[in-house]
Image 1 (cartoon, rainbow, N blue to C red):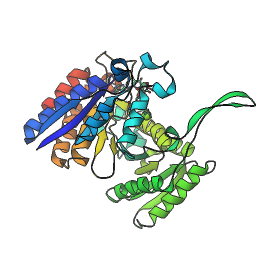
Image 2: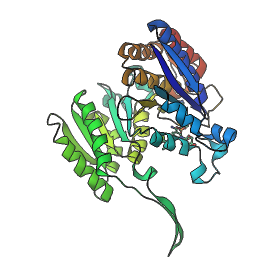
Image 3: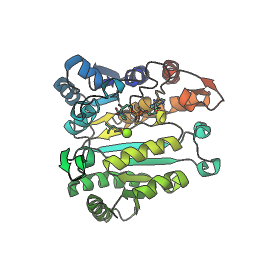
Image 4: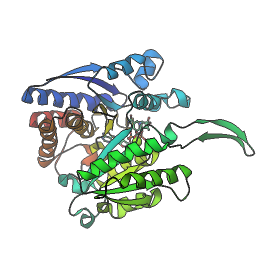
Length: 356
Ligand SMILES: NC(=O)C1=CN([C@@H]2O[C@H](COP(=O)(O)OP(=O)(O)OC[C@H]3O[C@@H](n4cnc5c(N)ncnc54)[C@H](O)[C@@H]3O)[C@@H](O)[C@H]2O)C=CC1
Ligand SMILES: CC(C)CC(=O)C(=O)O
Ligand SMILES: [Mg+2]
């Protein structure tokens, strides 16, 4: 089969990790008889530099005309002084909205080879960690009304958190469907003791749960959830939560499984279309230094093969290649705990491609 991919390398480490991912996809294509056709387009800071805007219409058009999208990361220090509505990160929000990507799946899986890279004690990690954060991606405070106004205390700024019942219902269904394929346990995370939007969230999630009698549903406030993730992460299977809480909790989940450089994600629309992107950002502190871990993006490509293209064997091949390179002891700096062989971005990518 021939698959058309829109590829958005973006900024910072984005282009480096995407380059390695395309090498791996090419190897998968060779091995299984597929062709992956790449159409590279601009978004983020590089698009601002080239066109004056962070999200050119051409990028949206190419994404819509493709079978799936692969994205590195956007943003960086160079553009930090721009006004909020012109920042590179707006490209990401704009793409998610334009492509209808309301469901962000963020699996946090502990590779057993990396237990020494996790800050958690071995007794907490015993038995492994396998959590999926199901994050609502096109609503909530990142998309609510925002602005500035004068108050008694002087100039103020605001961002509104708002959820429609339907937005909560559709993400809750994604979470419950996922739980049915896993260990039938959903934890919904909100702040319903304080926020009206969270009270609506909790009510709707509870209603959706009635259609899934086999699934156990728990509710946690986000502050407690953040603490429980470190104290006893094995209590979680599927976590469903809002845009901002999911953003924060998934970065936290990445650390307990070793590194944010390991966490892939799928941003899905209704149907099979999706944008696949690592959980991490553009990491300007290590950009251009051959230090970035490309595995989060490579594993995102595996999610693309599985979810959008239905290529389970091919996705397994990527995940097994990652495991085999970890078994051989290769570690990028974020994973290096004193043992094994320290390698850079390019060597890690090449070794995974060779292991396909
Ligand atoms: N999806 C995206 O495009 C995202 C973009 N951003 C943007 O990225 C820029 C930097 O944001 P930060 O808050 O620093 O978050 P970040 O995720 O880029 O980096 C946080 C820390 O993790 C490290 N790190 C991240 N990815 C890594 C990898 N693959 N291998 C090894 N280490 C890695 C970085 O070196 C840094 O110390 C900002 O402009 C931010 O807005 C942030 C998050 C997501
Ligand atoms: C622009 C931000 C919302 C990106 C981010 O941190 C994320 O999606 O994880
Ligand atoms: Mg984030």
